[in-house]
Image 1: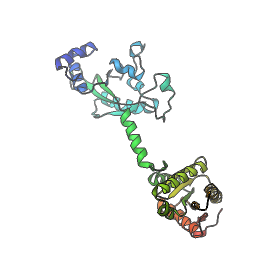
Image 2: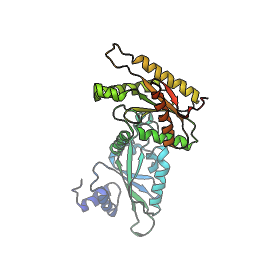
Image 3: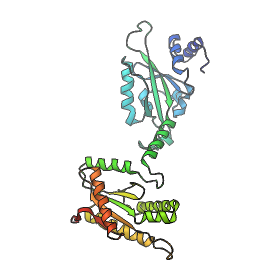
Image 4: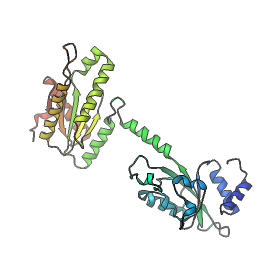
Length: 324
């Protein structure tokens, strides 16, 4: 496609309803755009012509009784922003670059997708305004558009984001993601409860049995915490041995009862089969989400220190606050 001469592009443009000038502009648009969808819109944004590969969207343009508007290609939650961008271009404003949007469902498979579904198909569109030959400096009487799939890029961005906020060993959210969640709750007024758990004696376990065994213990405890978490709880790994759990809509007393149940259940499940196997237990510290993220986590971790100082397998609250 990129090897076609400029004169031939004028001929190709005429075959899809474009003038020779428009065909030459088309050459500039898709010189390196093999696979892109080419669309011609009028000054109101209605699609006049489209390349045959628009069928990739599930849209049968040839069978359409009415001219679809360019914003009909976008899902409803993105149609307004797409329309604003295209309207500005058609009004003569300089809008360089591409705008991205998920395409509307044109078949049963897409119709089953929700606005937050990972299966949304993302495209980007770029417009080149077209002017009347008699008034080249006037308001555009339409535009040529290129639509390009950016689905792979979106998936890659999502994967990179997930890696940035996920602990690679346990698959839980990491400290960065947990702190971001705490900041959102603080912005909403705070008052929730946060618990910091840790397996007792992890360093001794590491020195005696090695890193692989220690990793297996941490992975198992992470999965155990996920199982014990109630709906709405957020579980994260804060560092190499500490885990955080955000407990919304819980009083401090209820949070302590839940944390004690976690600690006791884990001790029962981790009871050694023989005296030669290590005795595993966990401890926890609790704190209210208030002041700042650092203050909240420090208070919870101080509670964890108190619980371990008392022999482990306990739940403690820094400052010995009255539980209510």
